[in-house]
Amino acid sequence: MKGHTLIKGFTFLVGACVALPGVTWIFLAASGAVKTDPVAAYVAGAGFLLVASPLLALLFSVRVAKSLLVVVLFAVAFGMLWLAFQPSLPTDHPALVQVAAIAFAITLLARVGLALRHKRSALCT
Image (cartoon, rainbow, N blue to C red; front, side, top):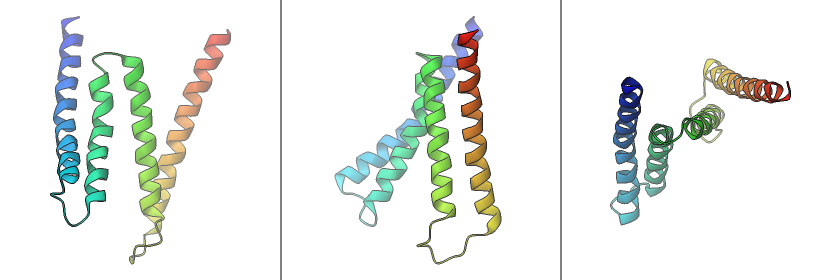
């Protein structure tokens, strides 16, 4: 039992270390210190906080941490698809990058769908 508590405490510490740059980026963008592109600073800060949220929630609830992890993975999949098929960039994206983004999104969607289906069928029996 002590090992489990130690792991939860360590993940909380790692989550706090990941959340700190996110809070710093958002604070810097809000204060006006970022002159070139404050929207990118907000997005970077939100990304750090999004990644840190399951690590911080694991200490309190495993179920909430799993749900937050699914949300983070869907956000990563959406970001990969957006970057792979963004038409406004001057460079042409290789087909392998686009196939990898599609494969990750489909695999994640299938995994979550099958987990929900299994959970629903286990409740009925």
